[in-house]
Every structure is written in structure tokens, then in C-alpha cells.
Image (cartoon, rainbow, N blue to C red; front, side, top):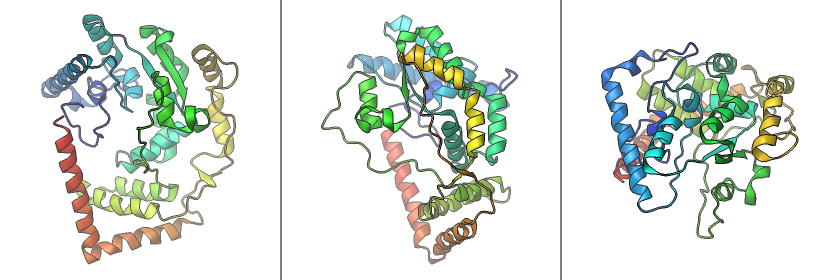
Length: 337
């Protein structure tokens, strides 16, 4: 467990001190955010990095293996001013431990759509999907160029220390991501292990993503108000239809998008998995491209307004505040360990 609790970062993301170890670079190789260049910010980073490494060393006194995980590592491995893997390699040489990297790869179109959905849901961006995709391919193209990114990791560790798994349920050992990960680290599934029964990070259906995106784009709403409205939006999204026939990209656009990574993906399958053929399932779900003025939009707006209107009775607002108060207390308690 890291010593420092980062805002809006789950406590189970125990490698975030590495993600935050240095500023992000833009497409031209310059520091993206000038606020990250300050002496105060640099000292803060170094303090958290030193604290995180201290915990690793302490853990090795008791355990043979230590697992670090954070969803932001894939980005930071290519776009941090200082590569987090270099930091670990330097430390490993000094303290005598070996590094292995486990990477779960999701088909590129599914990855970018899920990432956009998550960023909108968090209130981090107000871009449309197409705006986000264009920006991603211009500034962060290595995120979806899996072959190039893996080769960069393998250049530091060798391919033998890079374990590639598919983020496809059909390929998971035991049909579960939990048992598959245990297999990846060389452990047999423990009968006493209990997997989470609830989805801790559900995606919004596309109509509700659009409503959230419009909230994010509003300059007249405070952050607290945005969080308040988003709370009811997530509740309403769970009651709406899935609208599964719609997607951010049409079937033809998905095929065109994936074609540019076909060769690299095939090389990953051969060189990292020892397989001939496709890295991912070639089955593409038939979908219509989502448009704002679709047949479900009015219905979903009403569902959302009904949820917000309940706040007039007071109870949902207190429920909202209570949930966030309890969550803050739990995180503060856990951060001590």
C-alpha cells in the first residue's frame, strides 16, 4: 500500500508513485503541463517516489515476489520525462531483484473507446470521441501501437521477462481475469480467494456519456456541482437500455482502424505468445455509429431528470454526501497501511 493517497486514484493502484514519478511529455517532447515543472512539484514527486520504493524494499524482506499495478503505467512507460521502468531497473540492480512485466492487451478499438468513456465519466475531458481519437493518435500514438511499445519494454528487460496476455474473456484461464492473472504469475487458483461480485467501474451507455460530456464542458458549473450531477447520471445510466446496437465507430470504421495495427499485432502473437495468426478475435460486433439524435436520447434524458429531481426531497443528497464521507474516511484509514 503506498504511503501517499493521490486524488481520484483508487488505493489499489499501488504503483501510482511510479506513474507520477516525472512529468508527461507532449508530441514535441516538451513537458506538457508547466505546473509540473515547478521545484515544489519536483520535490513532492521525489518524496513520494522514495516512499514507494521504501515500501517495495520492506515488502521484499517478507515476500519473494512483489506485484505493482496501475492502469496509468502503459502511458507513462512511453511518455514520462523519465521512464518508470528505468527507475525500477536502476533500483533492481542496486537491491538485487528481477523485474517481469505482465501486460494485458485489449483490441485497439475496444481499448480506445473504453478509455474515452472512462475519461469522460471521471470528468477529465469534454472531447467528443472523434476529437479524443484524433488527439490520441497525434500525441499518444504508442498507446495503441502495441508492438512498438512492447519492443521498448523488451529492450530493457528482454522478451523472456515480458508476459503478454489477451484481455479477452475467451482466452482467460478458468474463464476469469482473476484466475488468469494468478496463472500469469505462476500461482494456482486459491479456493479461498473471492473475486469481486460487483463491477467497480461500470461504463456509461453512450447517451449518458454524451450528457456527462456536456456537463464536463460547462464553465458555469463548479467541480462540486459537476460531481453531484454526475452521481445521479451514473444512477440513471444503470436504469437505461444498453443500446447495444450503437458504437462510437461503425463496423467499417473499426475494420479500417484495426488494419493499421494488423501486422504489429500478428508479430506480437508470434514473438511474445509463440502463436501464428491473429492476436485478437477477428469477430467485430455489427454496430451502427452513435449519433446524438438517436431513438433513445429523449427517454434517457427523462431518466436522468427523474433521478436529479429526487434531490428535491433531500434524502438522495444526504445519501450522496454520506457515501462520499464514508469513502473518504475509509481511504484515509487505508492510506495509513
